[in-house]
Length: 138
Length: 138
Length: 138
Image (cartoon, rainbow over all chains, first blue to last red; front, top):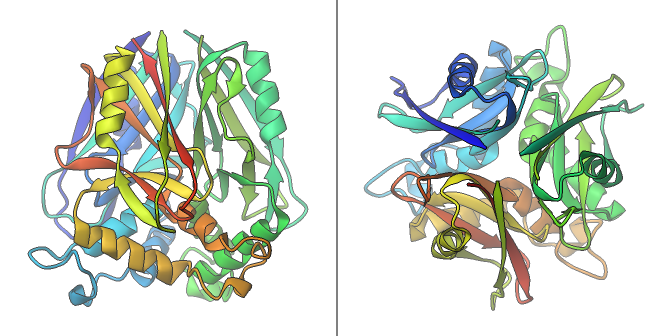
């Protein structure tokens, strides 16, 4: 069994935002040399998410609106966690979008359907964040 | 390390619906010959979900009602994604129910509690969809 | 490839509650002797969750409040599943917090960011529940 590890660094200029990281995950997979196995992609911070969906800007706007409805940023005082910080909503939004994606590796490729892409969703940006890519297999 | 891949095809006659796929996942596991490892089961489309829960029809009705409350199908115009299509709610519902289940394989069996079953949840049906089963181990 | 399996037993004195199980997962990892691979930690019951977040009591109170808003326990009669039982909300809350965490094992350690911890979230307590830890790798 082989294993491979890589970290991506992401720093967004805004509180929230979405980044398509499919190309970088694919690059890590190629570097690993692994052709059959599993790849784990996870946010290394509890205020951001990794998820698999379509790359369509209207959809991404719908996600943003929906997350703000279900876990609004403001008023900050509604959350116990907010005091020295104001990011409680980011932890809730992250639960809705998830921490990780586990994707099959088949014949050296990410085993996704044609239009599926891997996204990083930032909910508490303007600081350095990390994404972990771990591949195991042969 | 051994690996095994199988795709299930699912086509529902309705927009939404729930299918118990435990038997088919178990069958794939038997075909793989793998006795210790992990099995990944994931929807191959961002408008459907795989999740683990109980097989109780009242509960399944509660999921349907709850998902419609948190991510309503209509009015279609409330979503930016809807224009040529009308399935934006399906992407949101899928986030609540999840993309994938990773399940331990122990002694050749799906390592689930007695009553747990693996479900496919369709949110944008009446077309051909796929589920990926990937097993790695020995 | 090596594999290792361990079950944790958890019984809370209340309906809902949060337990930091990072130490126990770490102990299982050490017992496994595996230094590179993946560890799966999952609730063995569809009314409880495993998730990765920060160990901050204000945040945990925010999770509790938020879950009660999105999937309220009462009135019990609002759910079809409730009849002989009254735990339908527990199944919904579990979907928001997730079933499992898959974590990379690197150099013998849980490959988490410094402050991240692994939590068990109980939504239907006062009975014996189990958590499965499965490690695969080398």
